Image 1: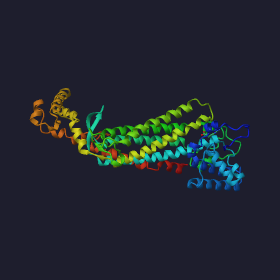
Image 2: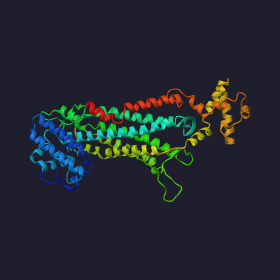
Image 3: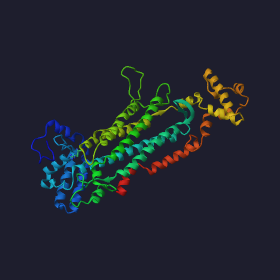
Image 4: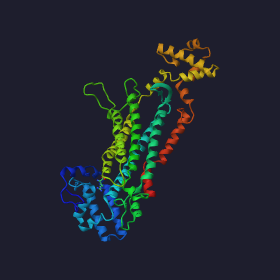
Length: 472
Ligand code: ARG
């Protein structure tokens, strides 16, 4: 058992207590962040005259060698250490002797773990934002290619009015765009450095907190030291943003599962993103979409768990906060993997455009437009609504679309019908007449695509890490 305390204790820790308390199995993920934070701390200690330049250089060399050896697999992080901080410090002291013992001067594991967790979360915010960028680019590509791919738009999962595939995908573009805007907001709130807060009340050493904050790419140091060691708000915000991303992905998955069903047949998921059945040879299942939908629950779980862990904690650090890691890491992995897989699924998916258009026609999605036609010819809307209602009933009986009816037949329902009815209820007309901002009409959609493109050029793939490099 290797731990950083022991002086005041007379008995060894019980094995089960030790294992219960230890966090190395999961906080080894913080290894890179821990070394990065320690390097900044040590540079600052020497610049403030707290340790010598020689000691600084010895420690830095030692830390770099540990980094190299762990990365190359020569040195394994094992559970004989209590946590990742103990591991780094113990190996460092083995390698560089007494200088290693000075690394922790003016620092507590409380501000150290607060820093590590923040650095780690920050890097995952960046990578998840990048994955969102890739998904948005893929969605935009589908939008550009399908401005005139007509399909039914639904309310209550009943065919309602015709839209286009571009318009439908555009709705998801908006959702994931808001997700990125949310990450951007919280990034600007969280990118402050807790290092130097000590155990809870700062330290008596003349630490230069501005310097470590700058070295680590933060916008500055955090303020109140008690808050600094016990704040996990940024993690809760992140988990809430991740839950929202999963909710969006899950809705999109549900949609694709429906579209991929035999009855709809609007899309065909590529073989590489589907699986078969062990018993039913005809089956090709949309497993990836189903799994994405299914995994939403564990991400919500991480958010609920973290909120619950924090709700009863008095200031400042409490060991409960060690529970901030496992579920959060799982949520970050889950969301990033789901985003990457979902993007690949869309990239390889085939859209069966003729089926979409046929479905829109057969579902009377142009019934509102047919009623509007009669209104324009002078019929009151209520009467027009009733005439078209009777026509729809007739069509259902004959299993045809409104456009399939002969003019003479239409005239039996109202003599106001003329030849121009066919153009008035064509999918092109129904969609393209809807050109208010945000509507599916061609002109409106072109504008929407232009603005979406602009969003991606401003919020480009690296915009979060660029912000830290520029302003940090
Ligand atoms: N493993 C601990 C955590 O994850 C590190 C901080 C320990 N601090 C302490 N005072 N025991 O929160």
